[in-house]
Length: 164
Ligand code: FES
Ligand code: FES
Image 1: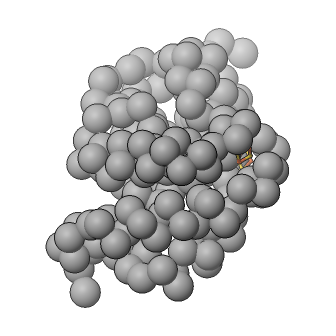
Image 2 (image 1 turned 180 degrees about the vertical axis):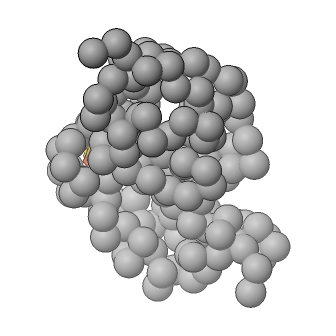
C-alpha cells in the first residue's frame, strides 16, 4: 500500500511525512526525523518513555498512529516553545543532581512534567508521585528524580504553574 503523506508541525517545523498503516508517531519521529529523544521502551503504553506533546497534551507516541496526527502539532523535548525554559531547567537540575542513569525515561518525564506544571496539574510536591504513575524508571532513580522536580517546581513563579 502506498504511504500516505501526513502533515505534522514538529517543533515548529511543518513536515510532510510518508506514513503507512498503523505506523506509530514514535516510529515516524525517530525514523523519519531522527528525533531519538523520543524513546521507545515498551511499545504498549505502559512506560511513558515515548511521551510527547500532541496538540498541547502529553501523549504516548507509541500508541498514537501517525496518520491520526495529520494537521496536528507535536513537540518533543528537543523543541523550542513555551515549555522550553521549564524543560531546560528540569534537564539541567536532573543532570546536576546525578538523577540520570541510563536516561531512557528522562525525556518523557521532562516533557510530561513540564507540561503538567504549566497546566497546573502539578502545583505542589504531593502532586508529583501521582503525575509520574505512568512513567517507569527501570534504573529506580525515582527519589532523585522526584526531589529534582520538587526543587524546580519550588523555583517556578506561581503564574507559571497554571491557573488556580
Ligand atoms: S514506549 Fe510508549 S509507553 Fe512505553
Ligand atoms: S534513568 Fe534509566 S530508566 Fe530512568
